[in-house]
Image (cartoon, rainbow, N blue to C red; front, side):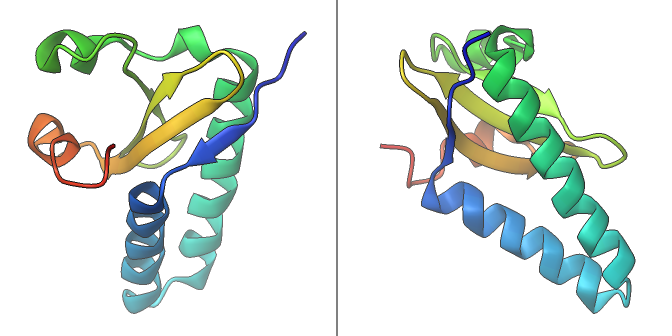
Length: 109
């Protein structure tokens, strides 16, 4: 099996940092650590099976190849594109947000 490296963009890393900061501000270090574990599992999964993510937003936004994979136990989506040599993670967004609007924020290019 070919495992592709998962490379988050700067904006995706900031999304993760903001989520961790939120959980820490709510007084739950255990939950903050759990979201990190869940994200690592999601990255490992999409590195092995990139085609399993939902193409829903690719159709909505007319971005060919865009996929989203949910985190286990958290309402977040990893939004990514598969390239021949790696997985390009655009954003890690809370599923209750307006995903199309958030994906169009700067920092994609």
